[in-house]
Image 1 (cartoon, one colour):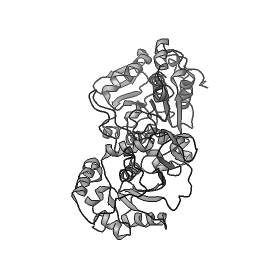
Image 2: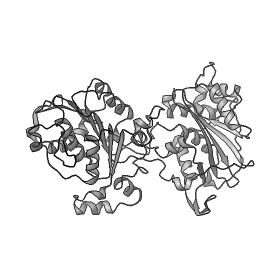
Image 3: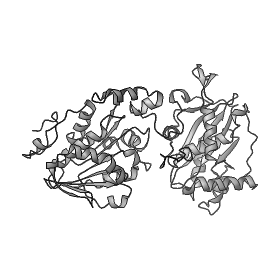
Image 4: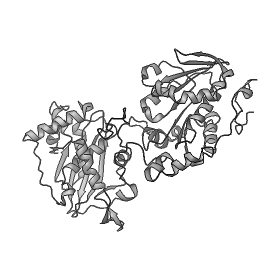
Length: 483
């Protein structure tokens, strides 16, 4: 029997293995991860989420060697989003870990390594997903998985069918990227297509979080540098927190402050609806209440995929009940889209009893105004906790889709050093955010000191104007996937 407590133990008993596979003393979190990937029969997919210097690449390479040596004539895949990055970083670690005497052949043109037991390891970039579909592998390792999309990961899962591997497994390593697709899949079981894993399936996904502070082998001066990190930098790069990540659009959203328990909205508060339209993407409707102080309360949400306007309209009216809605603002792209009836989407909603007005789809202006409502004014009294320091925007804790989106909304990493990272946001998983942004942009700019209870805006959907044409133009620019 193999003892998983020893780092040289291998589950196959080849006579040369223990001598050639590198011995090392794993850190506690590395040991836990290694056990799950190699020996834990419940584990099918594993994620090592670590801070800087937590040994992600090193433990990944050690596991790769052991997986390969456990499966004579098997096949594995070692990958990053691009081959250039893979060669420049993680491959170097792998070849430092892999004893040269284990290597039988290295095909540089195909980036294919063959070990002395006949096991093949492909070193690939993942930017060509079609190539991945032709593989039949027993294991895969994706390093820096935050660069990779969920669809690529799902394709790799479907290629785990090589019968020579005693334990078929996929594992990933990365820094924390907040509540992105890896968090949603491994923690919550959300597959990215609107479905959720059953509990028995999610039980096969394992996560190990490894803070930098655990690595006692790091140079003292490196630890001093990291010790200078504070706030969000420390949480993300040292503690591997899921709550902060690079490119985060709304780092000023604080769950403990902005999120409140539901309560009955007073009848005299102004209520509006704001909507984002989709067919394959979800259609969303968000209900906002404005109190006498000008605070905005998100108190209800509707989120539904793959239905047509009449269905959405019926559900929105049912959820609204007898509430008095001052106006409904909608994604301006609906003026350029035909619905099932052949009429424009906004006309369909009007026929169903929901007159709408086009929202302002200036994305950066909307984000800037949202920041103003999220800002914690140290002199304001929180209306629920009565503590000093309060924003002007609050959300009920049962608006789960909105909470997931605002906590994971991000900008893409700049491809070049001179690229402005604030120029755009990722148009992904932002449907409730878009809807709320339309609603926020229909309210006064609070930098002007205005706390009007009632908007002066009126539905003007039947009176085309230059303003509406401009809104539609912006919609075409900012939401190309909708057209």
